Amino acid sequence: MRAAALEELADRGYAALTIESVARRAGVHKTSVYRHWTDREGLVLDALTTNVAGGLVIPDTGHFETDLREFARGLVAWLTSPPGNAVVQATVADASRVPEIADLQRRFYAGRLQRDEVMIRRAIDRGEIPADTDAAEVIKALVGPIYLRLLITAEPIDASTADRATELALAAVRAGVLRSR
Amino acid sequence: MRAAALEELADRGYAALTIESVARRAGVHKTSVYRHWTDREGLVLDALTTNVAGGLVIPDTGHFETDLREFARGLVAWLTSPPGNAVVQATVADASRVPEIADLQRRFYAGRLQRDEVMIRRAIDRGEIPADTDAAEVIKALVGPIYLRLLITAEPIDASTADRATELALAAVRAGVLRSR
Image 1 (cartoon, rainbow over the protein chains, first blue to last red):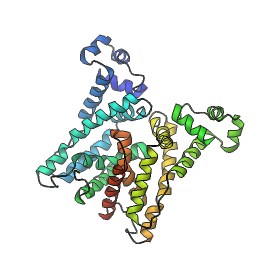
Image 2 (cartoon, rainbow over the protein chains, first blue to last red):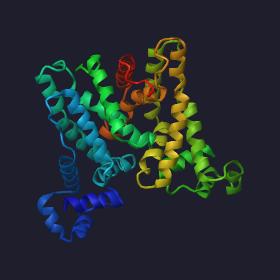
Image 3 (cartoon, rainbow over the protein chains, first blue to last red):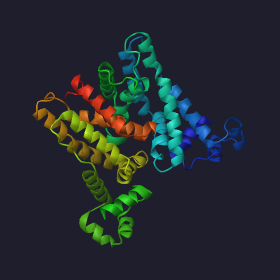
């Protein structure tokens, strides 16, 4: 049913998505959906989170720079794949017109950032970067240039985009501008 | 008629916008619109570009860091104002579902970046930063964290977001990771 929810999101957007429409697409009765999720927001959040967890691996190479680079390359690969594209569409496309989506989007990305921050905490534990490095800010410095090209300048993104974003984030960490305040 | 085009964009999106609907909103006959623009893409691009030119001033303080900071603060102020918000909605909200918009968006932001790059060229001319600094990459490093918060993490943006983005871009320029390749 999560897959049906994502397909529904990608095809018709969050505004048009209902528990009924997801049930219809999945070929089940709507009571089967309600058995697992109390409302469409819970269903969509779960579908998005599960999709990301499966598609976007957090590297653990034992080296901060390599972890960042592999993560950024993985993000580019995922964002340019059909499931990743569906997630971005679902969370961004309608957010400006449907206030409810802005809240869903905030919860979804807050959860994702939190999950990604383990890379930075491991680097702190290894003594590679200062202990007061702001993990969320590092992730945002890393993914910012990638999303900017995807959503704003509409430029193609590839491994070299990821590598450049990695250098940017690393330079900022090393310059000490991404510390907790 | 440009104002009517922006209102139409913000309210109904690019997919629903026609020369006829803009003329109706502006209270003129559609032939009056066609006298100035040959098609809706030209009209929308002109409306967006004029709006940005009026709302987003490029600072010229004689100092690179101050220029970047003022520009970033101005961008935040504009993005959180009704006209700026309308532009973002118009270019981003439907781009993933309407292929024609992706092209419009690419042309609009390419033009905008080119206009903003004068800040970097002036800093190069003053000898503040290396001559091979990639102007477009500096602007993207600067605005990336701001758009990421606006469109992806859905966090509030304010002057401190702008200042942090300025530090990030400066650190990257100083570390030499934003040079032409």
